[in-house]
Amino acid sequence: DAKTTQPTSMDCAEGRAANLPCNHSTISGNEYVYWYRQIHSQGPQYIIHGLKNNETNEMASLIITEDRKSSTLILPHATLRDTAVYYCIVLSNDYKLSFGAGTTVTVRA
Amino acid sequence: GAVVSQHPSRVICKSGTSVKIECRSLDFQATTMFWYRQFPKQSLMLMATSNEGSKATYEQGVEKDKFLINHASLTLSTLTVTSAHPEDSSFYICSARRTGNYGYTFGSGTRLTVV
Image (tube, rainbow over all chains, first blue to last red; front, side, top):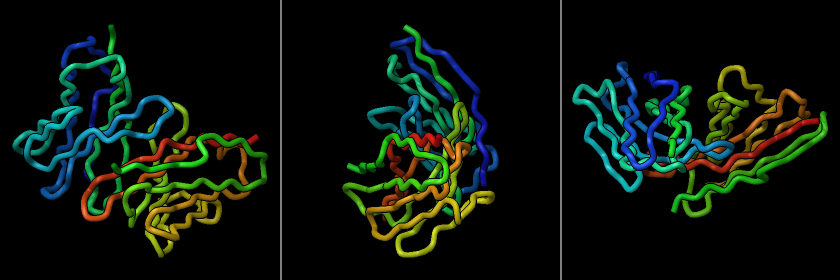
């Protein structure tokens, strides 16, 4: 299974864009990159996923490098409610989502 | 769309008793559901994968006789923690995979406290 590496934590200012990096250098050609977040004591919330192309939805944008070895999740205008642990996950070929430690994002007013 | 309901949200039980946790996909059919456990300040750990109509597959180190999983329909999977002990106290979370695409929706979790 492809492993991911994320920063342990990061702070960002309310109203500014938050850029969350993720390395997945061992990703295979047909493996998707998923992003979830978990607000304290809740179940993970889906954010976005992608394979090769950049993706955008109402929550965020996902930028995947051409070699697919890394990606960046962009929260365009962070709010205090975006404070959470963000998980970057490479979906394995057996369709299991395995969570790493994630990045603890704290949005400050 | 894509809502997963997990019940109960909190449960306290005595040592030695069993607890059942339900996970329902409300507006879609889920051929596969997943059960996770999360200890305080740790990440989610996958316990098992349940497929409708077949036996669950457990991750290494997870006791299948202690954590009984049943996936009797395309919308319901249950996890029963048998003979619970205080060390089983944890946050249990289910996830359902939508048929035909790669969407995974998570339940809101169950906080189990064994006293």
